[in-house]
Length: 346
Ligand code: NAD
Ligand code: UDP
Image (cartoon, rainbow, N blue to C red; front, side, top):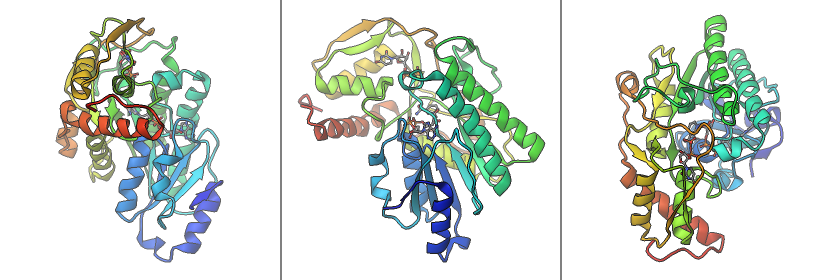
């Protein structure tokens, strides 16, 4: 199994083992054992790149990368991005995805979440500078906070509370964007910033706490569907395959892209509508129950993706109605493998 405890050891091993390493790109993915990161690792491994997955397994799971551990061009390094990297090997591309993404998870230790965003960005940018690597930041629609305009273009500065339960994530990601801006301006680091809107699909952790994983697992179990507030708040859901196409197109573009780029699906749904679709698809007997709306929960979210269309010729292809089918199948398999009885019809 290709598991190392230090990044330097991982890279030294790669240098020894791979005679063709000079011909290949080395791609470092932080947060590579998470939902999105592990699928990004899959794609770069399949392309023949040398992939180094860096993760502290805070919200990620080894099972997401278990199938990659014996691949010669994949290596897992357990490391916390809050701590600096000391590497003397070439690295060509860096995707910085390390950060808990679910509000339930990132609020467990908000100071740590802030450090992960800010110190993590700083450490990865220093590494990119040293290596002359191109670096992509997984930013977020949370940059827009509780937006007062809809859809949200990249030029909108947002409506963010700096002093609330979501601030550790929102302001941490905003500060990371600032660092990306300044490392580009001051040090010429080749940066890319993707503002990711709610993304769902296989490999989400069933206990992650986000709305798609909650509603689908509740429906499959026959438990109550927990709607926060009146369920009239909206989100735009992007299927993971579309999102990864967008991230990789942004990384690969030969254009000098200096601004953040929204990557998301403009289809907008209320949480009540999402619950209805999930209940219909799973043919579940669950009923909806209404719980208090968490503080500062944004009322609406919808990406303006004109920039991604123009610069990357990218737009999402998979509608929520279609993306939910493989997602439900995945969660049903996850629950069954954990001994949970799944409601008939799923
Ligand atoms: P995830 O929680 O599944 O993955 C995050 C990964 O980062 C996990 O594997 C976790 O263990 C790792 N991690 C967390 N803190 C770390 C640290 N200090 N050092 C090293 N590793 C650390 O979440 P995801 O949905 O895959 O999100 C990936 C990235 O995309 C995150 O940066 C998130 O903010 C961003 N993003 C995701 C969405 C979405 O809807 N999925 C939306 C906007 C932005
Ligand atoms: N939500 C809900 N029930 C749940 C989980 C979430 O109604 O069990 C709502 C939440 O209040 C928010 C929306 O669903 O309005 C999306 O929440 P999520 O945690 O997925 O991500 P967010 O976009 O808020 O970061």
